[in-house]
Length: 191
Image (cartoon, rainbow, N blue to C red; front, side):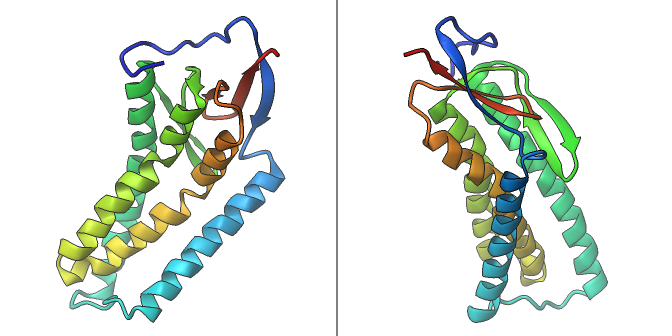
């Protein structure tokens, strides 16, 4: 499946259901995501103090807090939009977006390869990680804390994406993956 053709939405003959993952309903997966989120937050907060990052600024704390909250909400939407943009580019099938508390989700009826599924899962953390690190270096010091908090959210909020990418990396290369925004389904060829 190249980026130039439309991905199939019907499971091809000769493929069978291998596994499903519902990050909202699977308690073990949800626990792994919570632990990954907490570990990322703890690690990046510790790094901020150990590296003596410039977290204080000249702006009033209420202004910084308001800007930070807005930036985090915008980032969460942009994160899902990034999944959607990569999915659409790879499949030519319009993605869907939804809120499944506590998650925002992107889905598609398209079937994609294991490699494409890993790319879709990791695209936001990689792309926005690079953008945010560049912004940390280049923005005025008054915005450092806000951008750092969004960077923490980028890494920590990608715990579910990392879990999915890890799961995709463990299936055979000829697997087909569908993430409809509710359930991720993996199909394997009959052998």
